[in-house]
Length: 66
Image 1 (tube, one colour):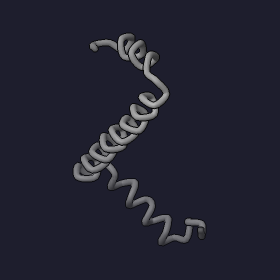
Image 2: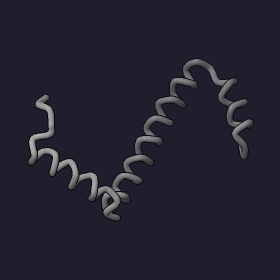
Image 3: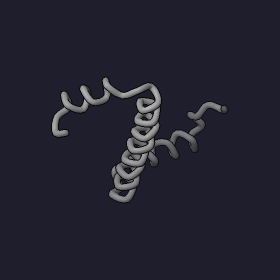
Image 4: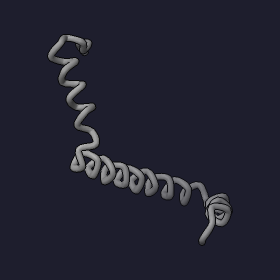
């Protein structure tokens, strides 16, 4: 399966149970990929400025109580 069209076609032929299993698998796959990207961004320092801004807002009382 090389193309999106082929994947869409195959997915459209799945049974309800297979579709549920695919959805569950894809959610896990996607979450793990997001986690890896987030961890890489943290290690590379790409989120440092956002963290600093959030800490500044907290220290200056600009955060709502939850």
